[in-house]
Structure formats: C-alpha cells, structure tokens
Amino acid sequence: MNYCDSPWKFQRRKTREVIVGNPARGGVIMGGDHPVVVQSMITCDTMDTAASVQQTLDLVAVGCQIVRITAPTVKDAANLQNIVAELRKRDCWVPIVADIHFKPEAAMEAAKWVEVVRVNPGNYADSKKFAVKEYTDEAYNAELLRIEEKFTPLVKLCKELGRAIRVGTNHGSLSDRIMNRYGDTPLGMVESALEFARIARKNDFHNFKFSMKSSNPKVMIECYRLLAARLNDLGPDWNYPIHLGVTEAGEGEDGRIKSAIGIGSLLCDGLGDTIRVSLTEDSPHEIPVCRDLLAQIPSLSNSSFRAPNAALPFDPFHFERRVTPEIELAEGIRCGGEQLIRVVVTRATWDKVAPKIRPKDDVKPEAVYEDLNILELDPTQPIASETINCDTQLVTVKDGTPLPPIAAFRLLTAKLKELGRNNPILLKDCVNFEPTPFAPNIALLRAAVNIGALLADGIGDAILVRGESGGGQSLRLAYNILQAAGCRSFKTDYVACPSCGRTLFNLQTVTARIKTRTQHLKGVKIAIMGCIVNGPGEMADADFGYVGGAPGKINLYVGKTPIKFNIPEAEAVERLVDLIREHGKWVEPEAIETSA
Figure: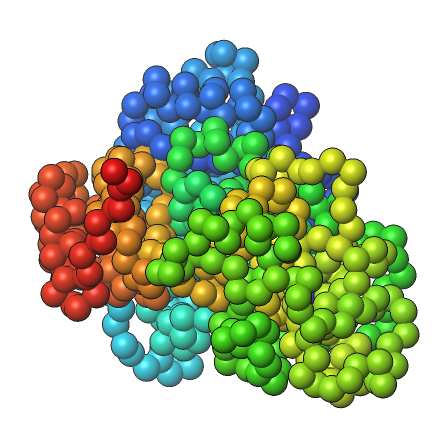
C-alpha cells in the first residue's frame, strides 16, 4: 500500500474539493489545488452567545479560516442559530463547525445552522463502556445497520442543506465494537471512519473530510498514513480531503513540538488539506503556529531533486526502531542497539553549557560532534560499500547535501540497506545553513519536523540540533523533541486537552497548578482532560488522569480506570498527588539550591 506518491519527493495528495460555506462570502474550499486551511475552536460555554461570538471574532482577526464550536446537547445546538446570526450581522462569514459527541439529535439540530457538522464515529451511535465482547459477523453487521439508521438522517439533511461533514475518529474514543474487533490500533481508527464514509457514499453524499487524531504523534502519523493508503486502494473517487491534528498536545514548547512532529511530517509527504494545532492556551495562539508551520513546509520537503528508485527503508504503517549495532559514542555513553537515542552538541554549544551542568542534571550533552568518529555521506551520490569501514561506524548526512533532512536521511538509510549495512545514524535538524539564524519559534518547528519525522520512521540513534542558535536552548530543544516523539523521558509528561465548551474546569489554570506540584516526577505521564469525551481512551498510556466529571467535580484515573469520583475541584490536585503516592510513583522534590 502506498500512502503518498513518493516518500522522497514532495507531491501533494490529489483530493476532491469539499465546499465549506459560501466561498464568495468567507467560506472555503478544501482540497484540490487550494491552500491548506487553518482552523481552531472556541473554549467558552456554547450557551453564552456573546462570549461565543467574541471568541470567534478574535480567531478570525488572527487569520482563522474555520471555527469549531461544541454542541454537547440539543439546547446547545439550537443556540448555534443565535451565534451564527450575530456573526453574520457583524459581517463575519467564517464557516462554523458544530462539534458533536454522543447525541445524533444534537447533530440534526446543528446542521440547520452551521456549515459543517463534526461527528465522532466512536461515540455518535455507540456508548463506550470498555466492555469486552466477542462479535460474530452477524452481530457485527447488525451493529452496522443500527449505525446506518442513526447516521443516515444527518447525511440526508446535510446533502439537502449543502452542509459538509467531518468524520473525525479519535484514538481516545473508539467504540467498544471497534476495540473488540481491531483493538486500540490505527487500523481500528481507519475502519471506524470508513464505516461512516460508506454510509455517506451510499446516499451519494461526498462533501465530507476525514480526521484521525491521537495525542501520540507516532500513532497519529501511522493512522493518517494508513487512511491515505486505504483510500488509494479503494479507488480514485475515494480521494476525500484530510484534516490533520495532534489532539491534547498540551501547551508551550511541548504542545508545539508534538504538533510539529505529527502535522509537519505528514505535510512534508503531501498529506493534509486543513490543520489545527491544539494547544492548552487561548485559541488565538494556535493560528500563528499553524501559519508558521505551513510556511516551513516548502523548504523542508524535497521538491527539486529527482526522486530516487529506492525501496522505502521502513514500514510506514507500523513503528519499529531500525536495528543497529550498539557502539560507543563517547566515554561512558553508548548508542544504537537498545540504547537511548543520544543528544549530541557542537563544540560551540558544549563550551557554552558545560560549565553550568550539574552531576544530577537530566538535560546535558552526551557527546560533542567534532569529537565523534563519524562518517559523513552525501546520499545523492553513489556510496561504495568499502567507503564504510564497518557496521559500527557512526554515519550521518554530509553538510551541503542538496536535499532537505527528511529526504536526505531516508535516502541514506535506504542506501545503507541496499549495501547490507545497518550502521547507527546521527540525525541533524539541518544540513544546509541559512545566512541568518532562524527565530527561536521557527527553529523549534523546523527541528521538530525534521528530527521528529525521522524518529517516527524508526530512524536515528543520536540527534544534533543546530538550527537553534542558542546553546542552552538547542540542548533543551533536542531533549524535548525526544520526549515528544516518545523516545526518551527526562521530565514529567503531560497530555492536556485544549479546552472547549464541554470543559468542566479552567484547563490553563488547573494545568499550571498540577505542573507546579508534579513537574519533578521524571518519567510519570499525567493526563489532564476537561471532560470524558476522549479522556479515558487518551489516558490509555498515561499513568494518571485528572478528568472533569461534573461542574466543580473531578474524577481521578489510573491509566484508563476511574479510581476516585466527584472530588471537589479545590481538593483534586492534592488528591491526585495522594493517588500518585499510593501507587509508588511519588518522590519529594529536591530543595532548590540557592547561593548565599
């Protein structure tokens, strides 16, 4: 199966056009030859018309092209009429998406007023109970008929009114039926979406797009690749547009890095017609990140060098770290094999940061680039086997190679495989330097896309970040990329949703409070979820979860299992600490050293 035209040379996936609203009056067209559309979501209560209108206007003011609003109940869905009417009165014609979970009747009401209805196949007609049940083919087909009965009225109404539909699966909210047949897998996510797509097509409705979101960038990448491959196999008329996003990415650098890894790697392969960067911050902060990320893709993807005739050196649908021998990188530091992916710095960075490193610091250089026994190769040129001394020779792409890093390192890996070599590889975030340094926010995105995409391919045994000119910043960025890609854990990991009208507490405030108490817990993963829509599922690989259960009440989870219910919000953070302590993962923070 092919998920893109070429993993070596950029060519945007050809899709049919999906019309969202009236393009002559602020609407957009997704797919075809149209630019990638950026979107976001407001965070206030949908019943608060004034706040909903103002937040929408704030998003439009910074360049948001589509705005999503949650509609958890029929009452909320009905109030979309007032929100849309007020926006149009103010000459704001941005398309509005109603975000629907659990209630088909809310979707039917919302379709009367908005341009797009988002449905989640995992909970649109199913309730998730984490039940284990074996389905016979007959029972499974009966469930599909029930889903068709629930979904068809919405399809027909959207067709009649000229609306669009987003078929949006989430890794955290697959139905029990899908989970029991396919497991918590990319295949399950794709099959869940295709079931709903077949119903739409049965009714000759084609104005829809897909999304496959996960809080884990590697899982998200696999899902979208598999979706694109399946659509290719189903035929040319299955070329529906794709919405890209890493859900519950978090805030600050971590949220931006996770999003850049997931969204950026797919954009570089030509996938994606609309994107959202989901941050636990005020929504307008998301749009500049979207714009900056899109602006980097032309220079990060290969559009000029002739695509090589080489076999793909990794499985794009199943993550597996490339097998290499273990070697000594520096004194006392080994890489390759089953060793951690190591962080290398330049001599200039070492000189800046080494005097400040303390023995117990987790963020520290592990080798100096100029001191390495490393072979630099230009993969665009023939590589003779005798050029490489042995399989324990560390290799990298030579600076000045006329390819962007993703294509260059993929090609290097393919050529090593052709030669029967499995040498460890040092990844670089750049192989060609710009005349002037990138701003820190751009350097972060570029490094995350380049190194993160390759790590998600299973390539890389050590990494070097040079695009960020600050010594300490480049070192920290390297570790943050490894953490976001799931390769190393040097600090507490947080999965935090971006907030919406369903959220039952102030996510930004609570996230800050939880981080203050727990940010010293190296290797512990904590999920912070505003409601239960994706909470339990997205917490499947988290150690602990803090989830809004009711207004002012919090439920605490261990993994995806609820342990404590209806805790008053004022007590919930300390009760979370108690839960972490009960499960043996709490350590007291060390006293901060102060100079006299």
